Amino acid sequence: MLQRVKEPCTFDAGVASSADILRICRAEAIKAVVLYRAGIYINRQLLEAVPQVFNIHCADIYRYGGLNAIGRIRADRERRQWATLHRVTPRIDEGPVIALKEYRLNPAMAYCSMEDVAYRAGLELLEGFFNAYTQGFSPKLE
Image 1 (cartoon, rainbow, N blue to C red):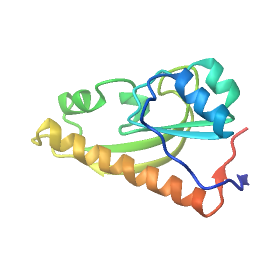
Image 2 (image 1 turned 90 degrees about the vertical axis):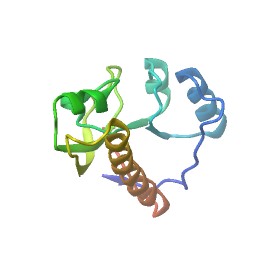
Image 3 (image 1 turned 60 degrees about the vertical axis):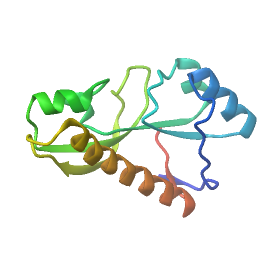
């Protein structure tokens, strides 16, 4: 089911924890959050207060969830990967996947080049999600 929403806003300055995000969401009446390269553990209090919290992880969360995903992908010499947009749950990078953006890697690439490719795929997912918001729609998950 789709739900009409307001235009998205972004924030990054001064956000270092779930408590910071929760404070902003309460002050601005924000009902959905999309995290990208946040590196923040999202606690239960935030998940209970904000109806929809999503994360973009620039790797297959089922095989490469958590930190250092690109390093592990490189060590495994992976060629095919997906940036994932998933719903955040109390367990890190284990929520249901909503969207994927495939990308290809060359195992001979330098780490920073692999990271650039992966983060570009993640940005494309983020852009698509924001475009859906500006058109007035967002996924509504029960």
